[in-house]
Length: 244
Image 1 (cartoon, one colour):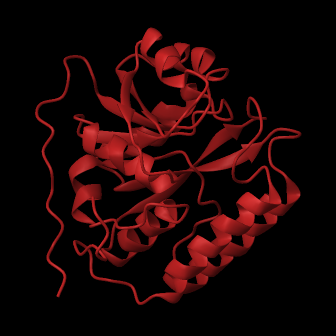
Image 2: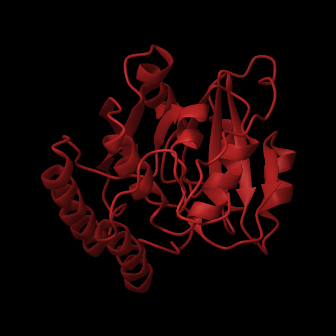
């Protein structure tokens, strides 16, 4: 029988930090300088290096980010390591490849900070060349299935999102691969969270994508998410045996 996942305390938030922004990172040295320079005041970047070989960690550190190293490969492993490192009450997630504008973060975090929503998802509004057709189709199919299953008005399970740190940890998130964002949504919906979407800009990333920019990466993500959809939904606060 699974025990409730512990809610880990990282101590008090750093002075002046309203939101910690978790940035899973694998070889994004070229994108990080501009991305980190555009971080809004009160938003602290937590860059989780997931095995980079291009000096991403050094670049992030030089531009003022908190740097965490996560040896286990996988988006979920990196995202969760950043969540555990965060100290702010509200935590946002964002890709580190330059495809999102940090200036949109206050729009995503605002309803959470104001107590008007528990989870806010950034609905991508793409610019030309930013979203390959195969990835856009896969996302639309997934969103339609989530609307059917949960009754929630969701159109995009994108990488930019925000929620309160302790509430996320209490969900007992277990996936450490591409299914992590889906697991957040499914467990939050099951727990009765107030879930909202807001529009965010989506632009061509810097460099080559490891996931949605390739058919292979998209297939892997679809496989991970299909596994989560096929499994019985566990009660919030129960991990599925994966290490946190």
